[in-house]
Length: 445
Ligand SMILES: *Cc1c(COP(=O)(O)O)cnc(C)c1O
Image 1 (tube, rainbow, N blue to C red):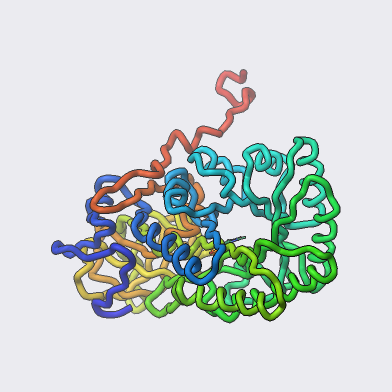
Image 2: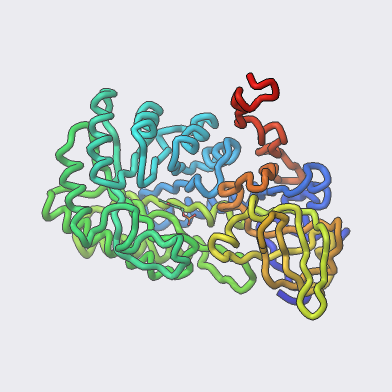
């Protein structure tokens, strides 16, 4: 990114001091008030994106449900925003489920995912009255049937099937191909076997089918192909098992722009591919239209998140490059290390200045934790505030305490107001679960 090119999202603006603002809040002030690193979430953009999903799909098909994939970013306040926007919620662990429950999220609108759900998790899900359990294996079907029977309940389930679609994305986030740990493949016959088993076992209501083909997807043709594969399979199931699929969950996966070069499809463009594909497939095969379920995660919260860092030492190695260190890195954003994910940065307190300085943005862990390998920044100095964009998804959610760093605070900003939604972890938090065995204590007791 060169010159003074602007790469802003949602409510982001540059004020007359030349500072980046988000939700009407000056980011230099936010850094001062809450400290850094700081995750800033643009509440308006999150809400607008939820509304866009519900409106764009809702105007194209009669029955639609949009579930936020909680793994992208989950705190109790985020659950509350999703509830207020009329979203459903996907969870994939006991902890995510517990977070939803603590936020009083209506559990009937929660769906439980995962390729290995423990008995504890299935029991908790049934106990809390989770709306749908998305069953991932034959053995899970049997365990769930038994647990539901013991609890005197019926479980409403979807089956996760693998449509066998290989998507254009990082191999770590491809999930719909034949060679995958997720779901049961159509091609191998496992999906059909699962349907027969689900229909024969007691205490299970098979409501529909689910697939999720991958994440950070830009190619809409993969979604259209997935709809076709699923509808072909649904036709086969109707003919062979006399079961009609009432709910079709197409998962999440819409990509976002991490750099100015990225041009992801809009929500409307996604709806314009999925909805006609579904309507046409249903009428061509003489099937009733299933309820359409979507599960966006990244596209709901990714662009709404910005991480603020304080700039530390700036080192120029003559003839090599300039390193700009920030007070976070691998622990608050593992994605560059995991996926070679790309990010874009801005010196938040010099946002209106031209980009003149070639630099590498490095984290502060005992690793080569490069955040951005090659970028051009405003003339950055120690003490400046650096904003890294598009960190709303899979950053806080994947954060760790590596090097015993404290996880950053997170604030929700809107209309000039900033509210803390995740407290910065404390030093005490870091030693809270450390245990000193008696034989190591000073008096030997
Ligand atoms: C991760 C995941 C999603 C969300 O994916 P995004 O790419 O963040 O939209 C949806 N459904 C399932 C089952 C997932 O595993």
